[in-house]
Length: 428
Image 1 (cartoon, rainbow, N blue to C red):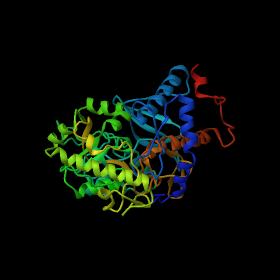
Image 2 (tube, rainbow, N blue to C red; image 1 turned 45 degrees about the horizontal axis):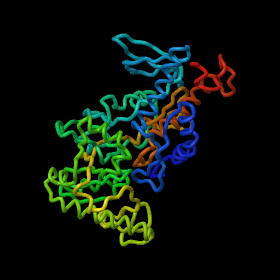
Image 3 (cartoon, rainbow, N blue to C red; image 1 turned 120 degrees about the horizontal axis):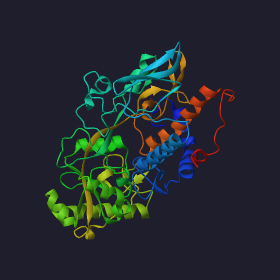
Image 4 (cartoon, helix red, strand yellow; image 1 turned 180 degrees about the horizontal axis):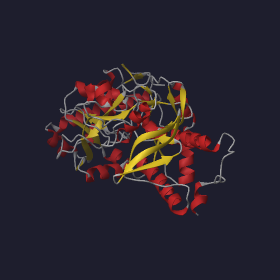
């Protein structure tokens, strides 16, 4: 459970995962057919499609469905460019919210589901980061400027409890744009880039970690070594995830090299250094295949490994993919990005029940729910890759169903219209 203070929430996340991925595929016709092993995973377990980022694939489909429902029915409205700033209460019950739009105050009534993300860009002097993790304020972030924990602060005003606010994830692979290296907000290099076989090198061209270790571990090893750090994908690895590579290259945060010799020249190291490092990695992969339970070094998550570069850290590499022998390095094309640790995800947030109800001093606050990054206690002290999107889908559905029960009654006795058999029935 990764140190989760509420392991029962992690069990909901895992227990609902298969059915909710199937729901996405079946109800929204999504391609999530590719399965990957990401950092910290003992098994391949993260789904994505052949193109686009999985978050983009999922959210675009959900938004499109919601837009269609708004256009063709009166069951939903979308209000954009609005600032929700206060919860409305009737005694202990949350009954709606106030928001500003175009300098005008509006009121909406009904249960409230917070799905506003974390506080990974809350950098002010009295911010949540300054309060709970002042040691991270100097770091860049992958979070947009909207991620300032506003809903957490609103929840606290009505007595909501918080949990794990000190646990903020620093991701190892923020993408550095050489034209703006000090930008406070950075793109994230998807963890799938390492899942397909990307290697991480220090300034001298050495490997120094298990690329498929946990995010906190990889970040910790980076801080012990010499920047700039590079994430390097050989031809087979980049081909497997080419949409991402071309996207990053178009945004000038990744560069394609025609040969390993050109890469070595740009790094200011002999090409033989890259040849030697790849040879050692290739030999370790071969030995691991021949003797999966042997090796001189402790492996992550368990067992032994043959990879000295990562093994000396105590979290050795035992899973290998798209491995390149050193003999091919000089003429091999590569996609390469300069990377740096970045604030990425907040494991802490509002404390919730198994039904996504926000907890107050005396139990659940009626009419208030939270789903996604704003809800704490699920991911322990270090979220695994892939679990954020899963969290949004699983607890988004849990919260939606709970809010419906709040409105319609436990037995649906207050429901004014029959539920659709399928979302698509509403728009066809």
